[in-house]
Length: 235
Image (cartoon, rainbow, N blue to C red):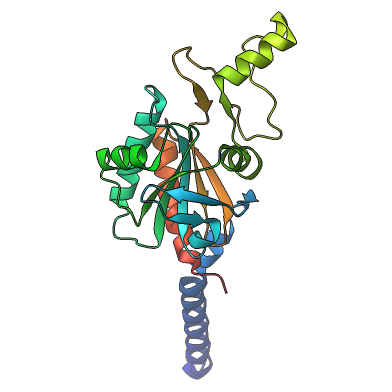
């Protein structure tokens, strides 16, 4: 039997395998990236950064970003959330395409001056980590309707509970189809809000929610940031 046909089969087989491997290398990351779900879209907004400049949702287009909702007077979960965000920002310091956005749920108190001092405590880079204040209506609308996260002012909750009667006392007001409710609150805290980080892609689409109190979830967030970066900029 001649070795010529066998050699040809081997050559063709090797060529086919090479094409498959190269194609997988070129398309694999993008294919993996598109497997992440799209969970919503962040509506456009205009708020004020700690340095006084106006920041809109459009300003974040083209960047992958991580958002959370905090307030500077918080003595319970917010310092831990912000410390974990600072850790993420440090770990991703070599990726300028990634930024972080902290919205205050206490804009009447959290002025630009107060947010500046708070950001300095966590060594937050002003171009990569935004602290936004402004209209309470805009911030709460974003939290509830765009990010689908619970947020409540305790005084408003208590007033609503008193009006509704004893059976409703202590129950948060309905906020629509939220990913999670604000949860329990301490009488010492004037606001309650979600502890989740939210991952947003370059096109303003929500791609994941991560409990900031769980190390495993934050590790997954870091991996998912890398996945979105491999998607590349929008066409």
